[in-house]
Figure 1 (cartoon, chains in turn green, brown):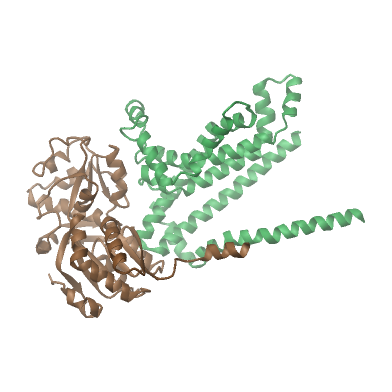
Figure 2: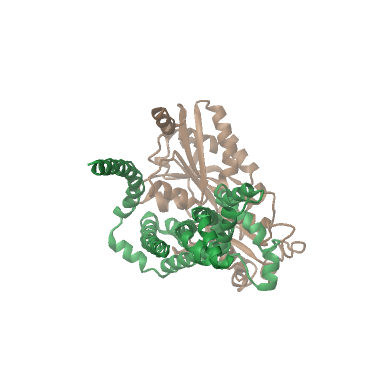
Length: 272
Length: 307
């Protein structure tokens, strides 16, 4: 009897959360449905058949993937240090990581151009020695994307690491595992859902970036730049058809990512 | 508290007459001065101006159904092309200012000490020079640059001039509108930038003083300009003198106040501000569909000369 009562009260909480939450869900879904509703399917097919539209979407997917890769390699270690470290100035480092979220994206693009441009202190030597240029290249697209999206990777991974009980790591050490072994076999798998959420957010933020990317690389055209160009050239109908196409591709990827994160989390849970 | 928060979010601009102006990006500097002078004359009026590419501003009215009381574009043909057709968003326009296309540069630009209006087309074609320009498929200054280069080929009897120069202006150096490349010019990423003379003066940049035969500044040479054709994704576009045009769209919320603004723009005070910002005047202003022009403006305009 008490058990049933508790469950009923629990479902009341869930129901209330659902009711309130569905307002936000509708707020997100209705405008996007509006975008889809004005779009006949043949329009979508016609725009999807344009080679430069497909190229722009591929470039965006690729560049955002590379960005998420860079964020994983460079951001996850930083997140680990922020979660586990007890060094002075930890708050300062965490604040610096969040800073790109507050910088207007045009300013971010110009700041990157100052440093990475042909005459910039980093872009100059890198261009001379390695031949790597950031003006109008894939590298430039990734640089713009990484600057605005990296905070998401670090923050979510940090929360993931903080959720791992340090006692588990100590137990593994007493059982004879080395510090790198503990990191690889205990900490990383347990922090995996947080890391994966962070990388998904990074990917999402990267793929939608327009202003910072367009300062460094208008060509090659990523999807947001192409959508803007199509709006100017052909008008709202074609531009929103491409936007919808982009959304459908991204939605499919997100569902895939979330599924992957959950499956890995279940493995980690089973291992425990 | 929630209610007061909602009231705060929903509060519009303060009462009074709000005049919404959509303008070409190059008009931002003179229009800020004109807006301030106009507000001083009409204390109850508040001018809300926004600036961007001319086509973008036209599409905001035709495609996004935004209300503007005044639309001012950098290429007069944008108004008939986008607003006259089935959208019926406007039915007249008045040419009110002239401009010229040129190249700007800084003292850091490659070969800056030796470039002049006599040797510019050789210098700009040298290896290693980086030239920026705007997108000819979406922006007037993009195709006007191509038309100017075609005219230069005729003027200097140099048939490969445009092709040689454009090798130094690859796709990476193209943006949606040329003002987005000013930062890249000042940082030395590009050496020269195709842009309007008014921008050169407003931004205090060095610029080439090109002959009127090629810089699209002279309405009397319209016939010759038309022989220079730019190939774009929107078809072949023949050259035209650069004439800025203004209209009051049919969907304007404040048509009378808008007409007063246009009268101020065409009057001596407005024209003086335009000239002070590097624009040429059109005196008297030319009107297309003069019978549709608001009656209060008709004494200020003459019919557009047919070419």
